[in-house]
Length: 147
Image (cartoon, rainbow, N blue to C red):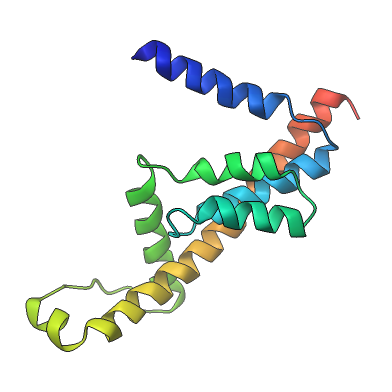
């Protein structure tokens, strides 16, 4: 089992290291991918990252890799943090208590309440993490190619 994990990590690392292109091209790919990976659009994060990378003229392979910032190990902490940040931005940090009557009576209203906070938080976290990871990738590829 450990051998399989090591092989997968080595494959991903080699994909990352073997990318050709300018440092800015590669950095934009990572940045768009990480940004997209911060949203709770399961199954569509990679498509969104690749689409943004194509529009922004970034590396689409690195965009796909960057979306892996969210994975089964990071879903809960990432989206909980995104939700709390969105609630803080909207000045509504109270906790939601889901009761059976709430589910029957105000399901759609409550869904909108949660969704807006999650999307706003995901946008802010994605923007910050995307810029940070893009800068790190830029410096890495700049040093790798000694440009």
